[in-house]
Structure formats: structure tokens, C-alpha cells
Length: 149
Image 1 (cartoon, rainbow, N blue to C red):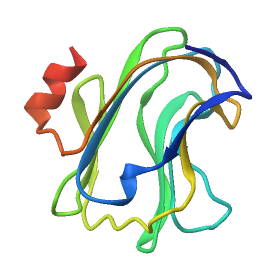
Image 2 (image 1 turned 120 degrees about the vertical axis):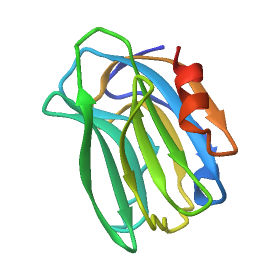
Image 3 (image 1 turned 180 degrees about the vertical axis):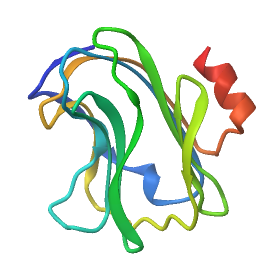
């Protein structure tokens, strides 16, 4: 699906608030900024966003244990990339770029949100999103590599 910066798919209340999960999203950007998946809230705590900022894929988390952006890979405009995140039982969150682990955060504790998850041209993202895959469990690194290929 193509997004022009002001449109998105509303995915309803998010499963991200509970349990283990994995999301893989295939994205081809033709802009250098904008969010392409996340839960958005006016509250300072409880936001989760996958985005592009200054030509890099980034993950933003706002929780009761802190917040901030972390680069998870360089954007190659108009080329497909598979960005994945996975939350494990021990509350560790892993970020992946094209099947490789980029980082992990221990003791991630997200505040439950009562806002809908959105995919697409949120916050100015321009480009395409394809093959959004969602699991209700944390995939192992090997399973994730297989799913990304």
C-alpha cells in the first residue's frame, strides 16, 4: 500500500499492551522522515513508534522506565527493508533490520494505552508498506530470520 504522508490504516486497540508479540513490517520509504507504525498518544508515557528520522529507521519508546529514539538502520530510499520488533516474556524488546538483531532493551515496561495502533503515513511518512506480519509470541532470532527471507 502506498502512503502520501497523511493517510494510515487504523488497526484498532493494540495487542502490544499485553503478553509477548512480534511484528515484521516491510517498508520502502521515499521520504527521510515520518512514522510508519505505532501507537500515538498525547500522553508523554505510553507511545511506541517505528519511524524514519534524518534518513535512518528508528524505534521510539516512551514507557515508565524512560524514553527515546534508537537508530536501527539506514534507509535506502525506494528499496524494501524488513523492520521487526519482538517482545519476550522477560520484558526484553528486540529490534531487527532485515533479519539481523540491532539492539535489545531489558526491563521494557510499556504503559497500556487505550489508543489505536496505526500503520502507514502517520507523521508525514511517504512510501509503501507491505507484508505486515504479527505474532502473539516472541519469535526466536532464527525464526525471525526465516520470516524475513
